[in-house]
Image 1 (cartoon, helix red, strand yellow):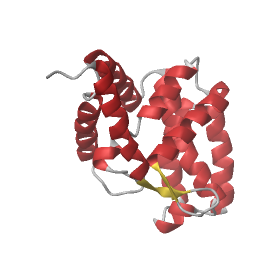
Image 2: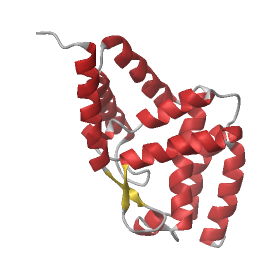
Image 3: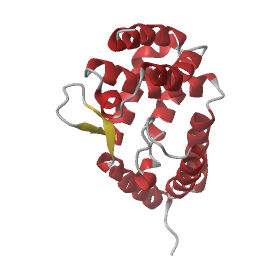
Image 4: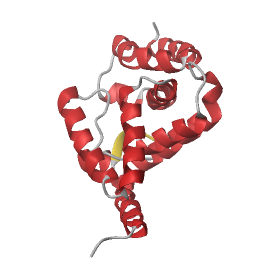
Length: 192
């Protein structure tokens, strides 16, 4: 018996509920607990809604929001890979690609292919939409680390140079004015 489009869509929506159980390294700003990946994705969508004027070029805000809502869905299968982890980028890319194929494959084919395409565009970060989405994905945890007194940077013994090299190019490429603010925060935080 073949599943209807609605059955496939509902199966996908039930499956992505699991994103709420993926705990990230970053805490909430009130430091009460670590955020989960679903919260992170929602918060980034809000960042795109509010900060779109700071994008590197003309963007389609709705596409950026869609990318940000989708970008971490793969963590259902592979978990969170913190920026400061020692994981292999090649291995991570392979695992995440397999997860994206599986998860978006739950949907009716046309819809699944469309969402997989948006996820892949985010990963490549070649369009202005994707560059801005990637910039926000780096900006939000940087903001959290600064406003929690160092957060994961302290836990992982991250240096000023590491912050500049890991966050800087991606944020600057997608949102140069946001990077200018970040430079001030990071310099003040590390007392450089």
